Length: 492
Image 1 (cartoon, rainbow, N blue to C red):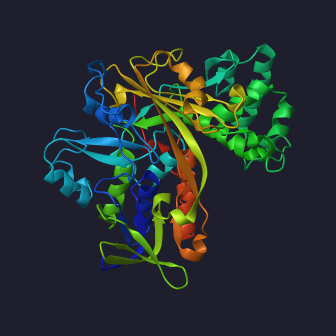
Image 2 (cartoon, rainbow, N blue to C red):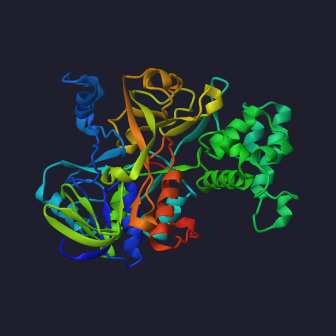
């Protein structure tokens, strides 16, 4: 604490851990602090007993749900996952792999030889196989700490039914989402998108996608509103319909990313998921930062950010000691005066004994419910994972239904997504606030991350991280990497 650092990072959420790793690789002197003695900030991850106590009071969970310790249910505002540490856990066997663990974590493990729990801050989201998070993992060589599994399926809700999302011209021809003539029009549009090369004007077919809107591009192909719905929300992953009046280039790039990600592993979706869960991600970036000289301090209460007479950050004080710094990176909870509330996320958590119906018995899926199908202002999302991801006992599934809250009644608001789940063993409801920074970093040198949104993928998360990195360093991360460095396991 008596040293001066280039950057002090406050909070150990995934965004903060990625930035800590990237900045350490750049040669900056980084101190990473958290007010708690575990990773994850103010929220926690719950085993079954803790989940029950939070939502059901003092009642005990029924025995048929299985062992409490086998559950790792992510909570908010920075979704968490318990990380069980014992002598025989994959990748963290005491003695054999302990050198890969940052000193703060290593000393904690060594001093708690019995089974214990670390709380790692993360979002319950999938990763696009060709997306920015995977490219960031490869750029930083963090993939050496991780293994991946392709997610089973990607679906869209249309006309009150769940449908497999078509992402190529051949899939479009087979899809029940469209009639015969609409399939031909959709196929022509998919071919245009797949062939489009921003650097090759021949593939543009006379269209300047930086000038024409997505709506105008779609009209040129004569697509119906329902087709536009699944293209914009289930392929391009837009959260609402504002994209229709924005330049078409962004939507085309998003569609190409989806198709390229789908083709990576020839699976049923464009998404991948780390074996042993998303808790591996912040842990991996923490290792990266430690390897490049980053310093970690957990259990540092208060973590008060200090400013000089010009209003610029000059350090962080905890327990009467002040570590000096030039810049601070943190989540909204550390600088509440520099953020504003921008909304709420409503979420339902379901424990089930079966996969979601009509999804081909898939153990891991995403379902997108476009806003227009529900009469909402933004989309609703369903995420499901199972015992194959070590989040529940064998035979059990955990499903999450989430949406930007438009009412104060999550039970009613999330009903369309909950109805897709079939019979549930238990159901819990939750809401959390979302914040965005309102300060000017160039004036105070404070770089505050935005709260996680309701989406079930990481693209918006990493966009925020890379934007913050550029603001901090003035540089951009080179994501033109060899994607073959990240592989997906064929089976768990």
